[in-house]
Length: 110
Image (cartoon, rainbow, N blue to C red; front, side, top):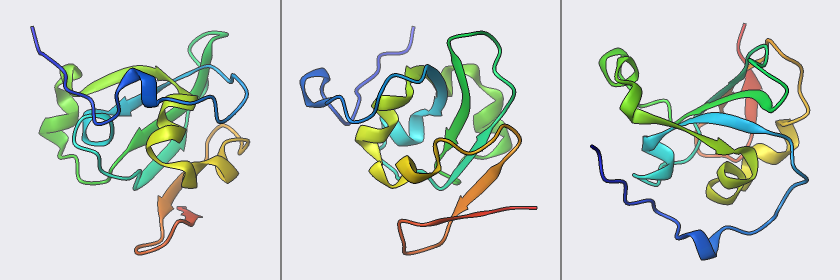
């Protein structure tokens, strides 16, 4: 069983956004502390799923193929790691966004 050492302690997580459900997030963000580099929104799997998926952009195909390298969190947890994602959270299902290097802005990918 994998032991997780998250960058943020539970007491450091603040309520920054209203509840919007859970998301899938790479350990590169929550464990390694990298910023969100790529985010996309899929059709939610259930009523509690926001549809959001967050990656650092440094994950290899092999890394993503290991289900132990991602976890399910409330979207608010990811906002605590990278508040730059907040303006994009209401975007539609089907959107793919990539961080503009060196900024806190994201642009849509075709």
